[in-house]
Amino acid sequence: MKYQTAYFCGYAKLPSALPTTTTNGSITLGLKIDLETACIEDVSVTFLSNLALSMCREYFVGKNVLRDYDEIVEEIGGGIPGGKKFKAAQTGGPSGGCIPASLIDTPIDYDNLLAIGSMMGSGGLIVMDEDTCMVDIAKFFLEFTVDESCGKCTPCRVGTKRLLELLNKITDGKGTMEDLDKITELAEFIKSNSLCGLGQTAPNPVLSTLRYFRDEYVEHIVNKRCPAGVCKALLNYKIDPVKCKGCTLCARTCPAGAISGTVRQPHTIDTAKCVKCGACIEKCKFGAISKG
Image 1 (cartoon, rainbow, N blue to C red):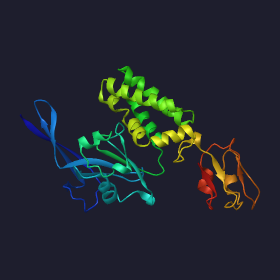
Image 2: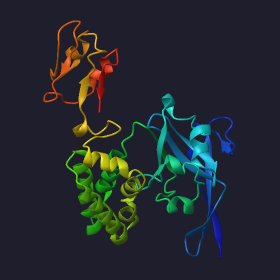
Image 3: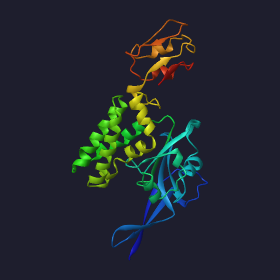
Image 4: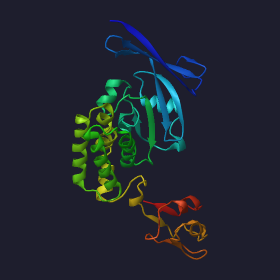
């Protein structure tokens, strides 16, 4: 067979101690390609990964294949900001799966990621903390693939939209337990019958979150509550009368006029008027306002 090595370079902000070959902030990915079949036969020791820690720190890293994500997150990324707990990692771009904390030590290679419902894909890595709602995350990535669908095949064009509707139903507090079975059945159908890789991998974020974070889906459906406090339709804001000092700052900040009370007396929130914008929580200096 005839082989040729292709190199892909990207600019990077890398820690000085990172053990990889770099030149002027660039890192290289080498692929051994069979020129007769155009198949990738082998991958060199480094790959490109775009690491984002809870959406607030982002840069490219190059690591040896078969290292684990725990090392990337803690040693290269410096851990999750604010000392919050690691909850999940999403790999491979919008069509990749979400990996729970229990699998953080999984060695990084193509086969291992496929086995746990994810993929190497574009090499993207998004690390999420405890404040992330996994149902909302599945919806976020699915919205991208719905927009990107070319519309040629029905399973992708229509199926992903119906799948998104079911997720919206759950985050709106209108879901039923039967919807979880519908989601699984529809997602598997889309994977098996879509014509291209976009449709075949689009359900991955949904299936992986349902597999590893099913309890969050159940909490949204049964108790009408978002454990992470993200899904607006399921949130309720309340003021702790013990902590509230009656400074009136929250009342003056509220755009909907939903907070009432007199100076130096505990305030209350009218849930019928509350638009759940979170402005009151940001302004309160005493931690008297909570959501859940």
